[in-house]
Image (cartoon, rainbow, N blue to C red; front, top):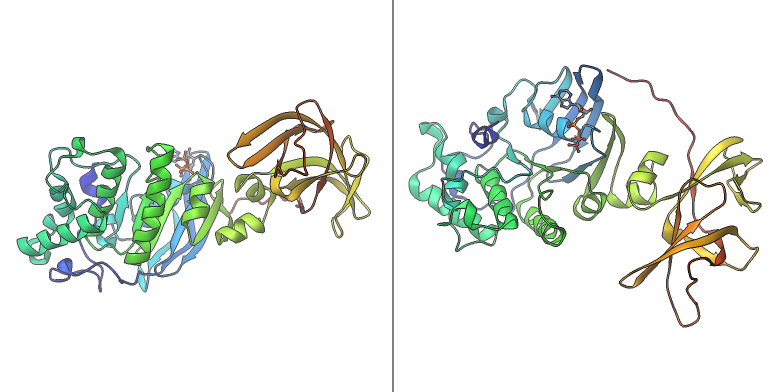
Length: 384
Ligand SMILES: Nc1ncnc2c1ncn2[C@@H]1O[C@H](COP(=O)(O)OP(=O)(O)OP(=O)(O)O)[C@@H](O)[C@H]1O
């Protein structure tokens, strides 16, 4: 794929026309997206396995999941960059399933900037408008106004005359965004847009993108495998697993009420304790203290706990553990604990106050989980 094919130049009814190209981006309402029972198979794998997803106009949605879970495939299916085997993709009232990328008029940003090296920043941004058919191409002055407006929007008003190689990675990615926005896309699709940037620039740029989105109101879908990025940036997070949606929810919902052990483990920091449930009590392997788990069915189970939902307890008043390591990260202190017969390290966050002395490696401690979750084991057969 060359960058040139990443930009739609034909408009869906109701999207930007030649005159509209020069109008302000701010305040535009986005279009609704509907993904219906979408399947995409490759030999030996269902990359998308019956995906249903509704995205509201103007929403900023993150596709989150580990490598191979289907994030990029879903984004490309929305873009029209790859044909799907079954299902439908709707842009508002329009069935876009059979439309090409260009006809869908999407703005697509790749992880690696994909700017044209031989064009200036301004020429790169103008590219999608300039390559429209003559009858839909805005005039030279309108394109120039649009480019200036976008350079201001991405906060690089002075850099229109530079070439991509004269920009930092973060600046290049902002230009890639401006180029995608220039055509006033029906939807904005971003594939790991900050993946190639260093940690500090990533954090700055994602906050910047959130502000930009709040101004433009464009329906936006972005792929990330970084749960922190998804939680901080998105209105809603779609957690994918092996081509299926495991949970869709606000950042608070997927973090605070994970629908499955998979989501609990993938979104946020998690501890897992292996054990058994019997008569509404969970007994972790290697422990004698039990935890109340009300309605859980009897049998082997794994209990999930966040590091900040555990406190240190008096000796004999909780689960028995040994401190393996102490990590200090700015104001947060994390204890890495070993529990007998438990395969995973167990982490807890402690706040050091004058009244609480932080244990040292080798100390024995008792811990009390305050909030925790058990999930039933499920085997979901494939749909495609
Ligand atoms: N062109 C292809 N041919 C064969 N299999 C493919 C192809 N593209 C993707 N797959 C498979 O489809 C599944 C989903 O891939 P996809 O690239 O969507 O995952 P992802 O979540 O975006 O992963 P990553 O974070 O590594 O980019 C994987 O098992 C992958 O190996």
